[in-house]
Every structure is written in structure tokens, then in C-alpha cells.
Image 1 (cartoon, one colour):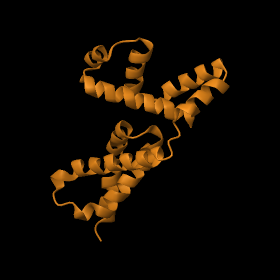
Image 2: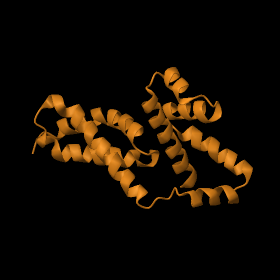
Image 3: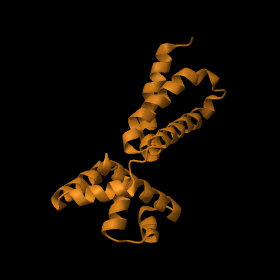
Image 4: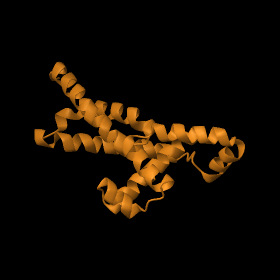
Length: 157
């Protein structure tokens, strides 16, 4: 069956890295579920790993798959349609919208909050943002897209 205390130690040691990775690849609401599922998969399938050196790549692949699986499940029901957004804007007082936007921004991890503030509030171009945060233009666009998804998720759930 294996050494359960060694497995427990391994899972405890890799959990912070798994969580950090999930924050970058999952919707905010899916991070805990992705971490839990990924660690369960590792616990059940660790014996199938053939090379110890491949562990981290294998682990992050599991997390990435779980993030995608959870995202696909969410978007089958697409709660983020434009009608829902328009209805929320039409029925909410301006002060409520402002407070909700501030809360949504504060809920973002720092690297997402930074890119959304630079683009949408300071109106800096994608190319300038990429240079400022030392990323490629495509990576910056991807980060901005994910930040906006997270904002929308926060506001509409």
C-alpha cells in the first residue's frame, strides 16, 4: 500500500505550490476544488509515476486538467451572459455598482488586479503594460482576459 506518512508529508509539502498554480490557471471560485481534486488524484495515482524527476510536471498537469474540467462544467451553464450583466447594471444603484466593483477588484490576486487597473483605469496600452510588468504581449492579453473573467464571475455570482 505504501508509506502513508510519507504520502501525507508529500501532499502537505506540495499543497502551497499546487494552490499557487491553481490561482493562475483556475477561476477564483474553483481554486479550492481544483487543489483538493488534484491532491486526491496524486494520492491515488502516485504509484503510476515512473520517474521521480517528472513529479512536478505531472502534478501541474493534473492541476491544469482539473482547472479546465471545472471551467468547462461552469461554462456549460454560462451564467455570464450579456443579458444577465445588463439586468444587473439596470437594477443596481450606482453606489452599489461602485462598491461591488471595488470588492471584485480587491478579490483579485495582485498580478490580475495590476493588469486590469493599468488597462481599464489608467488606459495604458497592452504593449506598454507588457513592458511594465515584463511579460509578452500575448501573456499580458491572457492575464487581462482572465482578470476580466474573474471580475465578471465575482459580480454575477
